[in-house]
Every structure is written in structure tokens, then in C-alpha cells.
Image (cartoon, rainbow, N blue to C red; front, side):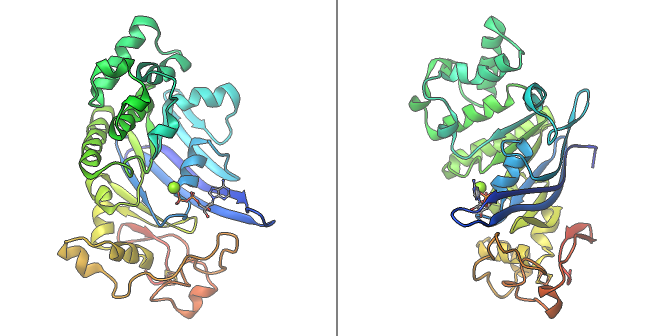
Amino acid sequence: MTRPVLRVKDLRLSYPARGASGVVHAVRGVDIQVAAGEVVALVGESGCGKSSLARAILQLRRPDTGHVLLEGPDGTLPLHQLTGGALRRARRWIQGVFQDPYASLDPRMSIGDTVAEPLRAFGLASGTTSRERVAALLERVGLGAALATRFPHELSGGQRQRVGIARALASEPRVVVLDEAVSALDVSLRAQVLNLLLDLRRDLDLAMLFITHDLAVVRALADRVAVMYLGELVEIATRDALLQTPRHPYTRALLDAVPVPDPVLQAARVSRPLGGEPPSQERVPKGCAFASRCPVAEERCASERPTMRTVGGSAVSCHLA
Ligand SMILES: Nc1ncnc2c1ncn2[C@@H]1O[C@H](COP(=O)(O)OP(=O)(O)O)[C@@H](O)[C@H]1O
Ligand code: SF4
Ligand SMILES: [Mg+2]
């Protein structure tokens, strides 16, 4: 792997528990790196902490502890330490795209002004230059430049998501974090937006952290895949290794839960599907977090916490891997 452009080290994020006095441990010590031109998919059940990890990386919610290091043009930017103007300037290099483009677009702002906003905010372009850049960005994401004068409510969901991507790309970031960015789109629109992202990755050497619950998207897009369970990464592997030789019992259960017409995948499946609920993030188990649902758990799994090890090129956190 080339030098990572994003390095996340032992990142932790917790929230005050609603109502009670406890703490929700949403992200519990995540290490992950993304290289320029690389797409890393992050998968895991709803509630496992994917969006929390995205927010902590983007500093939309400050992590409790841990490091988020971004390679900027003039050296390493420790995002977790930056505040005020320094953090605002650093955001030029790392951008987010979220599931619901409607919620993140200002209904009173024209599409042109929306995409131009980062150009203005980062002092990159104004006037005619800005309008030309906006036109080029709208063309780049497959929307005509004529759309610049329209407003969000006049656009379809797919068009709005492209506007969100154009805006995220306006400042020429090195890293884009996409949180379920294509999940709300129908199948054909999703394919179009995925193709667009693949083109952008190739042309711009973008690093992408791509959060999705859709394994078809993982197949189409990911170079590597990180699997999250109860706030921790339990397996990180290349896409092919993960799909063909899943090493963590939770990864196998996840693959098992989706019907995929693929004999290789089929053969890798565990016989028992994933049942039950994950434990509460307010009372994280002492041993392996997956022990209560793991079909192959042993006695020590309840008391000994497994750590990440390299097994056949994959990183996996399981005593039996
Ligand atoms: N603002 C918040 N306050 C309290 N708990 C939260 C907040 N946001 C998320 N959580 C909790 O943190 C955990 C992880 O949530 P989230 O990161 O949204 O997971 P995912 O994106 O994987 O579905 C869940 O238990 C969720 O209920
Ligand atoms: S450590 Fe034990 S409980 Fe955890 S995934 Fe491995 S076998 Fe299952
Ligand atoms: Mg989420």
C-alpha cells in the first residue's frame, strides 16, 4: 500500500446514554488507514457505530481519545487536535457525503451557490472562475451545468445526491467519507452513482471510506473491507479475501445473511445464520464482544478479549482465526 492519506489510531467515541446515567460506547478503539486512490468499505449491522466513526473522523463529533491524521500538502494534519480556523482550513482536504442529500442541502440556496460554497469558504475561487468551476463540477457528476440555477426541491433524489458529491469534491479533497451515500437511491441510480465514484477515484486519486450495509456495493467498489461489530473492527481484508475467505465468525454471519448467487461465497457460509441481538453498548462484555451470538464460541471467549492478528493477509480479531 502507498503511504496512507488517512490514518485513524485507537479512536474512541462515547455518548451520554439517553435517560439513564450510563455511557454508550459507540466507537471502541478503531484503527484504520486509507491510501490515496483506495476505497475502503466499512460494513456492519445498524447501530454498530459506523456513522459515529464517520463523525469522529470528520470531527463533526469530537472523539474521546485517539488520533485522526490526514496527509495535507504541507505535512500531517492532526485533525483530532485542530480547532477553529485551523480545523476549518483542514476540512478542505477531507469531506463527507451523507445518506440524505435533502437534509444536507439548504432549500433556499440554488444548486450553483451550493456547489460554490466550499470554493468561497476556502477562498479557492470567486466570480466567473467560481461559476466555471461549478459548471465543470456539475458536468463531472453527470448533471448539466444548466442545473446551477435550480433549487433542491426541483431535483430528484439521485440528482440531489450528485449535488452533494459535487459539493464535497469542490475543494479537491484528498479523502471523502461517504456514509450510506447511495443507500437511498434506487438500483439504477445507485449503479450510476457508483460508476461516477469509480471514475472519480481513478481520475482524482481520491481516498474513500465508504460506509454501506450493501454487499453488492462492496463488490462493485471496495479495494478493502473493514467489518465493524459493537464499536470495534473485527476483520480488515482485501475485498476478495473477505468475500471468498471470511475469517471472523461475524463476517461469515454477515455474508450468510444476504442471498448472493455465488458458489464461492456459498461454500464459505456458516451453517447457522446470525440470530439474536448484539449486546448493549452501555455494558460491553469483558471477553469477545461477539461471544453471545458466535456459533463457534469457546469457554475462553467470554473472558478473554481477542486482539487483531494477521492471518493469511487479513487482520482478524478472533481466538480461533
Ligand atoms: N447522538 C447520540 N446520542 C446517544 N447515542 C447515540 C447517538 N448517536 C448514535 N448513538 C448510539 O451509538 C450507537 C452507534 O450508532 P451509529 O454510529 O449511528 O451506528 P450505525 O451508523 O452503524 O448504525 C448506537 O447504539 C446509537 O444508538
Ligand atoms: S473470539 Fe470466540 S466468540 Fe469471538 S468470534 Fe472468535 S470464536 Fe467467536
Ligand atoms: Mg449510520
